[in-house]
Image (cartoon, rainbow, N blue to C red):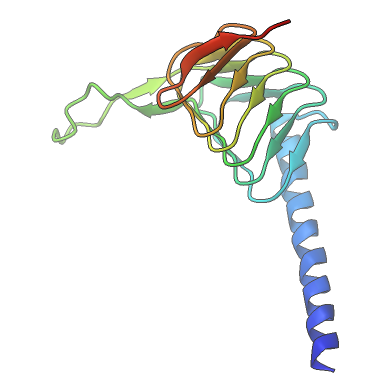
Length: 168
């Protein structure tokens, strides 16, 4: 009997959790005008900020990923993109050249993030403000993107460095 109750509770929890995320992602679609064929693959995907968000057709983003869109900035993700889990994209961050011991307000480094069509971004990637990733590029897992990436490039590392162009 205990086993049956645990199964029922687990099943009910799963249904409620799925309903919660479906509602959350529907809210994102309405607030940011996301197309219906962009996929939220997984749970705990966070999108926040008053900037502009444009997500391409047949693209997806994985669990635990975050997009922060500062007012006046935008994130654009092209069509047919694969963005793995735990990817972070921020359009604003503290200016690293500022003196952090100062009591003055720390200035922000802000910029749009533009991701071309057919881009593959591996797991655990961080994309800094003001970055453009060219179409058909690959960003290896666990990378930190600090510079623009040309089309058809494969990059990886901390910070992400050019490895090679694709053999097309």
